[in-house]
Amino acid sequence: MPFADRRSAGRELGQAVADLQPNSPVVLGLPRGGVPVAFEVAHRLGCPLDVLVVRKLGLPYQRELAMGSVGEGGIVIRNDEVIGLTGIDEETFSRVLEREQRELDERLRLYRAEAPAVEVESRTSIIVDDGLATGSTALAAIEVLRARNAESVWLAIPVAPRDTAAKVREAADEFVVLETPRHFGAVGAWYSDFSQTSDSEVGSLLAESRLR
Image (tube, rainbow, N blue to C red; front, side):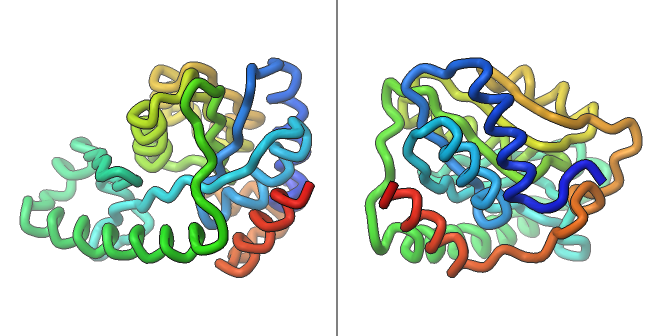
């Protein structure tokens, strides 16, 4: 296993990002699992940590397989390949989108209760997650930050399949990935401990980062 847990992956990823010397960085973790990774990256860079809320639009009968994603600011990304192969119609897509938009709004209220969003305009904004699968969530996150006028949008990930890495590399201004295994499987397969991250842990990490 390449990584013991998310925090361990974050320390290794933080060093790789620091080596590139980003200008005026801010780190944005994708909740929930991306936040422990992002916490360590932000700590290594000595920069602010925030969350960027993006929701996967999973198939109704296989929610882990994304047919798209929705992000803050009403950004919607469609995975037309998955939609075409599975025969998902517009009514089904819209129903899933509406459900995930409600969940996104609820998480925003939860995470922003204690502090407002960190300003990303004219900064190097570094999106961090614990891994990629289809890449649709990361692509939506990139679009959200471009809409918020980030100077440069980076994506930093511990592990991703090679085809997904190639796709997201084109969308980001800089892409940092530690592992691109030939036989990927699932993100959790690349961690010894991939236990679920709770909302309370996300809140604690955000609060701790703002005390530093």
